[in-house]
Length: 417
Image 1 (cartoon, rainbow, N blue to C red):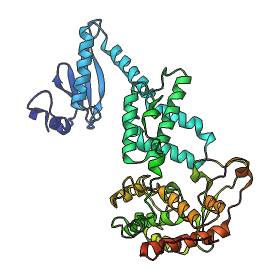
Image 2 (tube, rainbow, N blue to C red):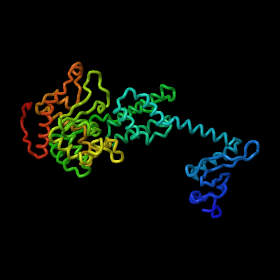
Image 3 (tube, rainbow, N blue to C red):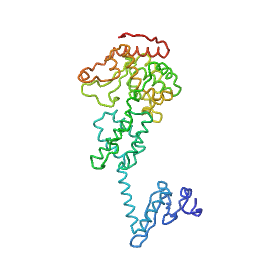
Image 4 (cartoon, rainbow, N blue to C red):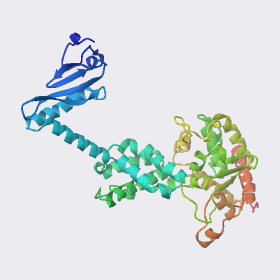
């Protein structure tokens, strides 16, 4: 667009975008002291013309276009005109506003959160560090990251956490609340905040234990197993649900699993200690070994053509270097009609109940669930009972197959091993 073709002022968005450069730099009046400058090389920017206290006229840059839009430039010009009408120097006012904006940028929740994260890195293993920053980036920073942390109210934190509660990710919600409370404690002890807006919030949130462990009754289990086998949506999710039913591992352990952790010759899955979210204490087993029953190996072989090209068993849809969402299995169960009745974690409770009822040794069951015995016994008993658990898990997988097929006869069962 030529300068001569301008029809009205303030300049329209079409005019701002379309104005062509000339041999020499020129300015076009937008209105009330605001000008649009176009350089011969095509660069465009905003300038404000004002009178200095000594009575001389001067120019003040307001930023380049299109980073500074027409509406934003007019807002800035209005602030400067108001300053001038009150006898203030527009240049000094602009510098003061810039300093305030910089201070606000330095006081954002994201800046504080990353400072806290850096201060804690030495106490975490790599897996924990990734989970912590991933949870903050997924659930908190998109909402509060750019806000000054002192401006975020307790009721706003409550709304965010209750939103996570409604999604059913109660364990994640509890962790996020703890992270953010700790972040505010950093600000408080360093004199940058007086109060912690997350104090007391936990009293009005669900603890999540009962909901996280929700599981169907024995009578309902066969129908659930058949529903999972016929899950009509993503095939990898269906296979993941079936693996959860067989192996009694934590959903996060399976969701974050890497193909490199599986030894198909030894029929063994080695879960590294960081998958539990902590470093092992001195003398503790550094990894959790999971025997792979015949059915689990078949499911993994079916999954490999789908995701085997990636390091993760369940890579995310948008970023293949990150695992699927922490709600992926829960949402699949909801789609099957089991909301509030069955969770991924609940499969561990089902396995524990069935195995105990059928006479398997408690130590073997607890070892499979990666539970540590309380007290002194837990310190000295580090056995993983791999041979016994291999037999136990194969029996359990066969038992679930019979349940799904409707071939189990109820009765009194004695000890199997």
